[in-house]
Amino acid sequence: MYQSYSIADTFGIPAPASMKVEGFIPGQNVYVPAQKPYVFRKDHLRDVLAFLGAHNGDGLYLTGPTGSGKTSLLEQVAARLNWGVHSVTGHGRLELNDLLGQYMLVDGSAMKWIDGPLTLAVRLGHVLLINEIDAIDPAELIGLNEIVEGKPLTIPQTGDVIVPHPKFRLVATGNSAGSGDQSGLYQGVLRQNLAFLDRFRLMEVGYPEPEDEMKLLADVVPSMPETVRESMIKVANQIRKVFIGGADGGGMLSVTLSTRGLVRWASLVATFKSAPNALAYSLDRALTFRAEPAEREAIHRIAKDVFGDDWQV
Image 1 (tube, rainbow, N blue to C red):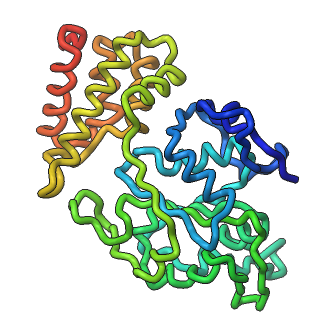
Image 2 (image 1 turned 120 degrees about the horizontal axis):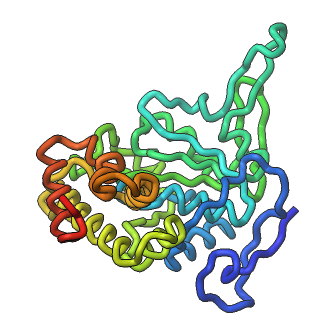
Image 3 (image 1 turned 120 degrees about the vertical axis):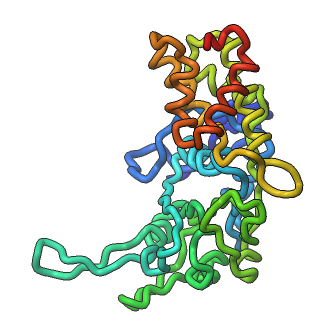
């Protein structure tokens, strides 16, 4: 059921051959995320593997700006370890019962209990990944306190008491660290219950270093000239600086070019390479069509300054 994986070979980072991590034997588990190109950062990988190896009664809370790779970090680690993941996106109407499951009409005649993502993860030894957890009503999340600590899960509707599988893990992501959004950039973020947050170890996931994004773009669009990839990353980092702003709050832009958006931009450039200006055409479709006209103009000005004559317009 389990097998050891070489950290160096599995995640493509320098590590002694003796360093291994336990995962699941490859099989037909539909809950294992699909592998995608990903550049692992050593510090982040170390924290995630330590948590998966021994949670010690903690959950794991990944915080950081939008599109910095919080969700994909966990999913791509799990994909390489063949570890099932049940992913849920938080919102203001999400209730604990949505995670537990519900009775449903089966074959048009009988009501049958269907496990929700939390119950499945607890039974099967998978990861329950709650994205945007800081958008959920704090009163609902209190119901997770005991299961985070490894205590049995009780299903009130059926009376079942489920002892968690030893490989069950609870992971959350959020744009804030649970104390609310001080920047004003993220609508719907709620201040979370301190007792709930105290059950998590935290990780901060910022945007990757330029050399890491270069490796990622090289995997995604290997035919793109290196100089173009370098300029795209410079554009992304300048946009991020303007978006994040300074210590006094958010910046001058309401949108940012995340790593996810950067990959989208590069992929669209390859798709629309015959367009009159593939860079500008693709940037609109990757990001700036959802910005205000003045912001769109400002972002294009940043790109033009970085690319110079290569921008073409």
